[in-house]
Amino acid sequence: MEEFWFTAIATMVVYLAAALVTNATQFGKILILFLLGGSVALLAISNSLTDKILMHGYILHEPKYYKRRAELADELIKETGRNDWALGMGMIPSKGNSDGTAATGAVVI
Image 1 (cartoon, rainbow, N blue to C red):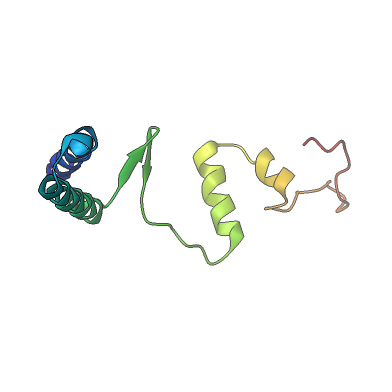
Image 2: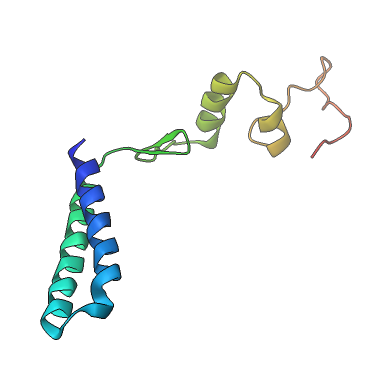
């Protein structure tokens, strides 16, 4: 929750600095420059304290690495409950017919 306040304060400082820069004296402009630097520091602190990001309803976190592409495909098939997309992308082999030959049919893209 504290990173929310860091972000909010830094954003307000940037908006105030942009609004007041035209009417400022030389000393005021230098002070605004330091305030902008402070806002950058607050944003950097906020970003460094954030482990996971919620964006568009999804939680973004560290990437998960797989030894084989098949492991990724198997996990996604379990998650979605379908495998047609993985077959279409060639991530998993098709089961074929009962006599061992490849199944033929229209390719849907």
